[in-house]
Image 1 (cartoon, rainbow, N blue to C red):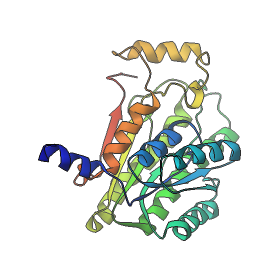
Image 2: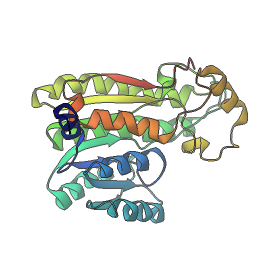
Image 3: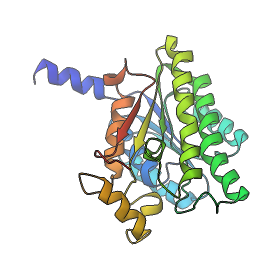
Image 4: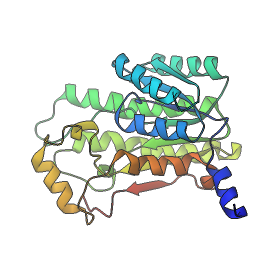
Length: 260
């Protein structure tokens, strides 16, 4: 094996690391958790309500030869976020990687139609939840650790009907910029991944859902497809690994060149 290839494998390894991913019982969070486990990291799964899905994901990850715990917690509640980190530290003694992934989508709702209740729900989960997840990460992540926020391409390309959702995902992007400056002296990197709409996850877990929106998104993408969970997991792998040790305060679009 060549020395360059060996160095790259070492830089990509997460053996001995502990990764905490919010909203990781299924979908995108699950894919990221499984990717980190395949790289040798021990995993802290988080779920809000679907205990069965969390247990199934934990079982699959355990088969990869790493340690895994699944902790219930609603990211809209600060006390639950604090408990999530408390239990993670109790289980593993440290946290090296934190992915603020948990969120809820809201589409095809024009500005004149959304309600106060809808606004509060989406912002409480997406904005407040991500803010306080990153706050706890900043307090507890190990030196030279990684904090990653999963945003949305709607923060770069406004889409009709997504004012509330896109706004709720934009706010934490600013915190990424600020936090990268505040804790960079510890060697901690803080970045965001900005995915295009993800097929087989979120609102598109059902491939027949939202046909008009799906067509609009597909028409905007030169590659003619939506993102897959593995596309986002690839970016999450980079930001978690040693290959990105001098990359911080950045926002990586994973959208196949789409313009919406």
